[in-house]
Image (cartoon, rainbow, N blue to C red; front, side, top):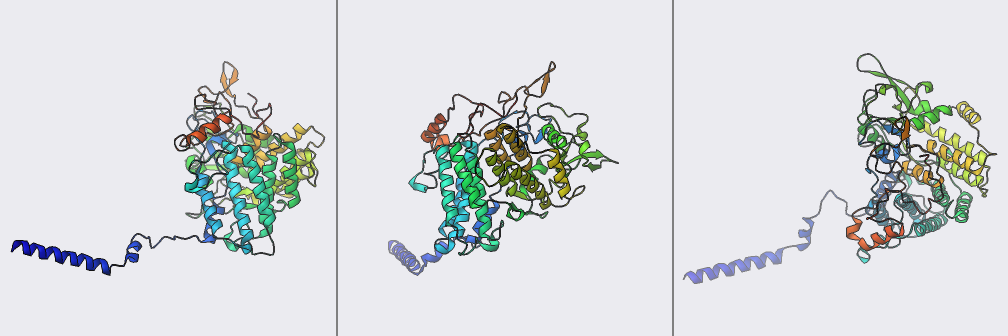
Length: 533
């Protein structure tokens, strides 16, 4: 009886399970794992906007901002580029593959057809813009075999020479494909130019000129060809050509670079900054010596007032930079040193990605080298200075300066600091590169690359006093030298070991023989170093 009863239960249960399975909608079961608030497909306009917003030049306040002697700190640990106290911020990243490149690859799949040719060209410009910054600090990287997914899990490292050849060729192909008779570049979803095809073309050709000029010393004939080709194609020349990202003093819309400055150092006007930073002596001294009208725009000395308040003094004569690598305790006169003005670190300040000032400086150097660029070096240089000073009008007006530099001020500056048209090539390149150092303030990676290529301006990293002599800061990790590259991601040793080891051996360094990040990029050649010590 008991066995019969149990048998009935089992049979009934089996019938119930089968019945339930037959009535189950398996399609709806998979819906249970879907986030109803997530988008599982690409919306081209949204993806393009995100790609543009992610295209701003990288910021490296400690390693490069200090190393290029814009900033200085009296402290040790945060003095990565001031005293070369550590290697913080010099580790390279392969995030470009999973980030910007992946986003752009997904987007490209969604815009096929002849009608989208201008969109695809803009995407290609952004792709090359993103990658060149990475190879410029790490050298050889996966390129031709990258982004292949499961088909190529361990891509080879291409030489930097082959990467540059590919980038320039691919950029040219994209620019030649642009067609003014076809639809624009994503219209209002384009934060740069609202879809203007002509402006995207200028952006692309200016990028070509930048990359071409990078080869000036390693392959002069190749550099000449690409720069001349870029100028003939049409590069940025007008204020409206500037590619920049807009921000606002609203939560979620603030300038991320400025937030780094504020949170890392300049939290409140006056007093002891969090990490003890000020503008560097090299930078302020140069601006003062040349009577540069940009000085009162970007720099102030916070003068103690009543109580714990401070008032800004932007008078040029009052500005004073902190000498890099010269201090390791808070100086008693700390308040008398200059720091960024509230205009410069306004949370609504723009980030300039590429502009006519850079384009004209490239033309000036091309002309100085005797290339056919449609201008004299002096005329292009003067145009670059005017364009660079006009850019400050894009910043919010914050007392004590509006950001507007008058034509009369620019004229006076050029008259007091004339271009050395009759000088040697080295003198002309020094003038152009020093102007680029000033005019591209904030674009750390491009200034860093240009400095390594031209070796100007010349920096002194031996400012610590021992027995009346000036020496590099004691305990520095680079023998007192500025790094000339970043390290490859250490994770590559585990996931792509053979190709990783082959790449670093090809670039003349190894894990066993530490080179203190002094190994040079393929295009960084010549006996000079850009350092006086």
